[in-house]
Structures are given as C-alpha cells and as structure tokens.
Length: 176
Image (cartoon, rainbow, N blue to C red; front, side):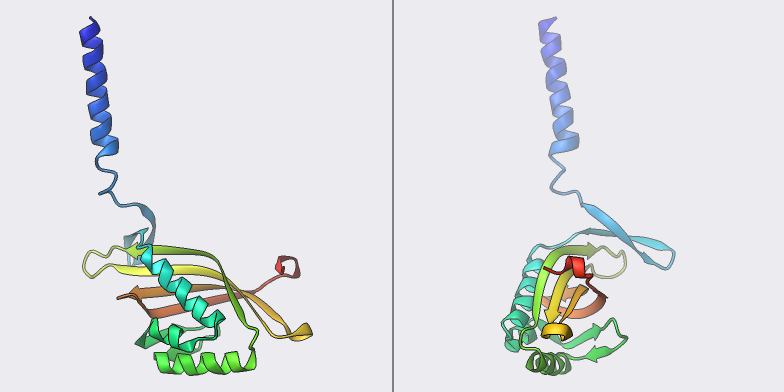
C-alpha cells in the first residue's frame, strides 16, 4: 500500500514537471494583440535589450548629445508627432531636436515606464516595439511646460526605425 502511495506521488510529480516545469521557457508570454484586418496577431513580451536602447536615447537628450541620439536612429527614421507632423529621416529629426535644445537648454526627459513587445506576424517578420511613458519639462517660470508623452518606437537592428508620439499636459497636482 505504501509503495502504491509513493508511486502515485512520483507520477503526479512527473506530470506536474511535464506540464508546468519543462515547457515554461519555450512557451511564449502573450501580453496582448494587434488587429490586422480581421485577424488578431499575438503581441508577446519583447527583447529586454530594446529597453536599453530607449534609455540611452533619452539619456542622449538629457545630456544634449545629439550624436548619441543620431547613432540610435536609422538614417531613414520616420517620426509621427502628436501634432500630425511627420519627420522623415534622422538628419531632419536631429536638426529639429538641436533647435529645440538650443531654445530650451533646461529640457528634461524622465522615463516613467517602458515595455518591450514583439508582434508575431504569421506571414512577415516579427516586429519589436518599445512603448515608453515619459515626463518632459522645459522652459522657465510661467512659460514652463510639463507634458507626459507616450513614445512608441519600432526597434530594428538595435536602432529606432519608426516612432509615434502621443502627448498630454500634466495637471498641476502631477508636477513635482
């Protein structure tokens, strides 16, 4: 009788390992979906190294180092602003950014959170996107601006290929 109980325990342990233990590493971790026409495409947890690219990117802005920012963008970078403006090419983006920094030398970008996700298409390559929430401030006194932005960036070969920017004004109660 005792041997039968031990055998049952061993069988249960083996089943648990097979179903819950061994396959954990190979299973995807689905965090959401994207609609492509009528089809739902799984969005899975993405590459953590893409988060470092975003961190370096905004460190470049905070350090007023447009060389770093430019090194993290593809030459044919496309940027879509919350105003409807489209920036074509890294050179154009760097020129605009430099003009902004020349005007607002106290500009600051603080990352609040950042998430890397992979879109697993069936008929085209997987896309890696990093969605980042930032608090941004610039200007002086009554002219000081405080915004929160969502920066959604496609990462290809460790550089930003495309980005979408969404923005809202922070309420007074949210400003440090």
